[in-house]
Image (cartoon, rainbow, N blue to C red):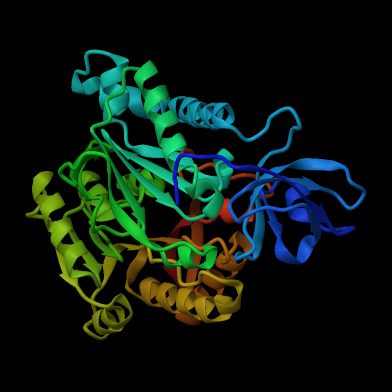
Length: 427
């Protein structure tokens, strides 16, 4: 299938009376059970009009009968049809937004490196450039790792527009003097199969070294965009990582689910006396050790390949205690059907983590599943504290970084909850 065309059909999707509530509240999806009928012919992936039950125009979107998300909306205005001009407008708006919310970051960490102009500074910037529905480009994620773009495409309609979207990225970067040396596709998630798409990964355009050097919070990392998790690195935690530094000076730190060592390295940057990072992935631990060496902290930071759920009880039995424990697990649930099981996992891991914190020490914990909403997550931590016979004092509640914007009404865009607590023995 071509990735450089927009097919606009004359089909009109009619919504049932009283349905489309999520979309009308600000979201971007029309579900299969909300559709009354489709008038006219179309092919999956085409742009269609969406009308309410009374024929009132609601907007334009891309249709796919293979998916429970029947239409992914792209425009709410009759005079803003889905075409190449709209795509470029969306991409430019996404980049201008990142320039605004990351301005202080650019000034502090990039211009101080001696960049000769803003174009060079923006080239060094690593951020999420496009965040799907939150940037009104449904199903598309584009991460910018310095001068490399990594795209993940998960929806049929916008997958067909992929080349147009990437072309628009190149155009808006050129206007700001930003250099992009390569693009890699990581559309290898299983969810693509639900859209009737094959899983795929590889270079888009010329090949390049997929081991990309980036800098975040003054710390350097090698990002493996070919084999790393998701697009290679989790940019959403950038400011959360920085927030734990002040708690770590002279402290013994345990970083669970360390991935490539990002929280561990921020703890070291905050002056931790020792840091142990744990992850079940051999590749992740290998990359974490390399990143520790890259930043000259290998004498204070070590990494162990182990199952965190098995290691924490073992550390508890040995009487180990830490001043700071960090829990950054993968999403334990990717569907509503598995929330109960996931809640058990979050409760267990937090209870185990709390038991390893010295009296008066700190726990930093998070969830990256949008199905585990804020209320349920905080309730689960409260229950974990009760079972661990600990009391918690909340220091800070945070979310994903601003380059991963939360679309009000679009529940899936709010996924990351991050909380820092002081842990005290029950009195």
